[in-house]
Image (cartoon, rainbow, N blue to C red):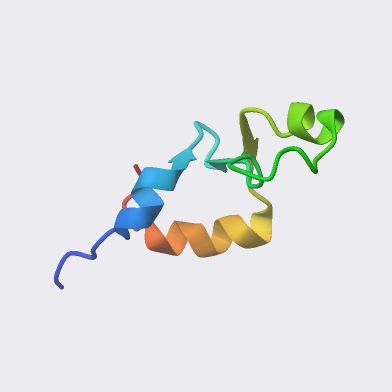
Length: 66
């Protein structure tokens, strides 16, 4: 069997935690921030753990982990 390729976009955007969950940056923090409340901006700081349904799809893009 040939080796599987990793999706280039996925390896730049996601990290796998020690327990096997997928960690990613939060959306909605690039522009148009004036229309967002301070609470929204504050709560979406840093990274979040992806939901199980999304993580299942992302793991197919990273066949050998990271």
